[in-house]
Length: 124
View (tube, rainbow, N blue to C red):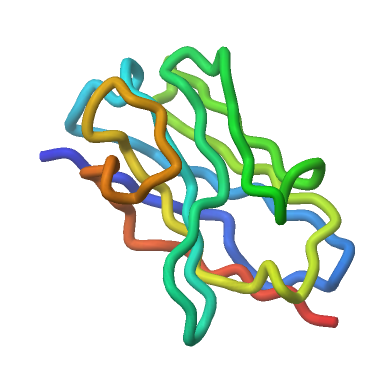
């Protein structure tokens, strides 16, 4: 059974950094695009970033561009999200997602597999 497990969240001061990991199993995730989404308290879940199956192309939401970096290691079935220069408005539960098909998309409807989420809290 396909499974995604996030880790690496925590509490950090504004300006700090965190690296989230997403370990995939039960499906050949290495041939599919992957993405990260987040949901802040009282808000809808929003797209953060995505990466193609081989890491050759990435795309970021404007709010994180230049601060966050997505990467993947298909040999380890793991996707990473490096977050630098964190701001209080980055506080959210971060979710790793596996694409439903070959399309690299920013729409959560195109993702069929989701992790349980990891909390990131940025204090001011």
